[in-house]
Image 1 (tube, helix red, strand yellow):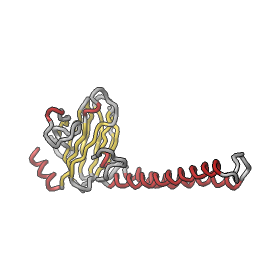
Image 2 (tube, helix red, strand yellow; image 1 turned 60 degrees about the vertical axis):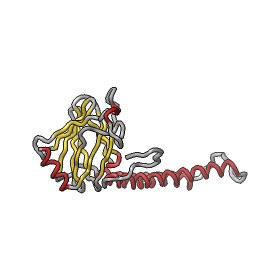
Image 3 (cartoon, rainbow, N blue to C red; image 1 turned 90 degrees about the horizontal axis):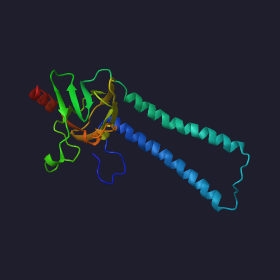
Length: 227
């Protein structure tokens, strides 16, 4: 989860988030180089007597600053398209979970298990135990297995919501009457926090998402104890 004064993104805990981090660093470096070049040119023009600021006819430089931005956009677009295809629909997921947004809580259904569903409400501040995170802890955590391809089907029963877990690289809108899909594979055990990222009403800030990732053997024991 995020920590105070954090300047970058959260640590990646899924392959998709790792790709997003690489793309972020790749794009940030390109933006930094462009900004440095523009700043150098502006400084040179304003601080030397050997150059003037009048517009002059220069076919060569016009050709360069027309072609160079196109090349830079291609260098940004290609890895971006690759990540979009990686985030696209998977053919044969090992587990499917349906997520429904309500005002103002989440409900979950495990499609591969009959009668396995739960509602997830935020724990009020007055009921928190020492070590719990305010506005992030819920009474029923989602339990998912690690190293398992999971398909998340996301929808809403009232207004627009958004199911977002930053460290897993997921942010998908929950729209009434529409079923959106997200791909998820958690690479390490742990507890991952998220929140609704759509302004859905008065209690928008009070519908967190908490995922507990466990090894597959523990997940099987949990499902057998719940059903």
